[in-house]
Amino acid sequence: MVEAIARRSLEHANAKDYRQDPYSAPARGVLTRIAGGFSADISDCVMKQTTLQLTMRMLTKPWFVTLLVLAFAHQLTQKILAISLPLADNYLDALLFMPILLHLVLWERRAIFAQGGAHVLHPLHILIILALASVFAEHLLPRWSARFTADVWDMVCYAVGALLFIYYWNKPLKPLYPHDKTAAQRLDA
Image 1 (cartoon, rainbow, N blue to C red):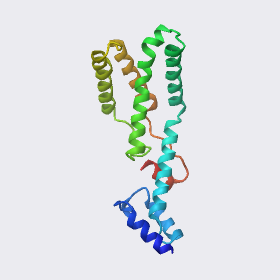
Image 2 (cartoon, rainbow, N blue to C red):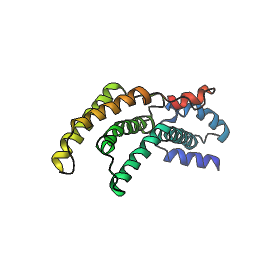
Image 3 (cartoon, rainbow, N blue to C red):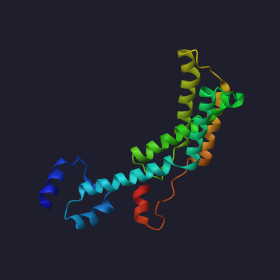
Image 4 (cartoon, helix red, strand yellow):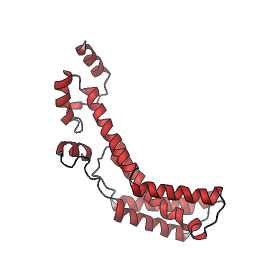
């Protein structure tokens, strides 16, 4: 029975070779002995769990949640409650935009593209994202709709937000299991 299930799961498995996968290699040997060869699907579950852990660790960082709540609260007060705070209305969104965007790009690289928790964004990549966001938000959007206005100070706020991200938040994740080197390597590989 176990052999039939293992054979069927391996036939329907991806073309991915689990023997060469660095994430499942530590788990594969243990799980193979436990499940009698039925390790491909179980290793995949272990990988997804670590990706989920990585995602939760990144998207629940206190500074990131604080920036999201601040941006949401500002939009709520400005658009729904019609409370005007001139300085915040003009520059807060632009200041918060780049750290939020760059953190989501970093999460994408670490979790979706499996570059691991040790990956950080290269300053050149951050500069390219900053330039693209500035051109899009301050040049293309105002040409497309009269609701948007081009403002050089918004680009300054984007640059300040990018610098804050580089200096404070573009850091490798600390190992989830600092004393378990195998688990830490699995997350950071």
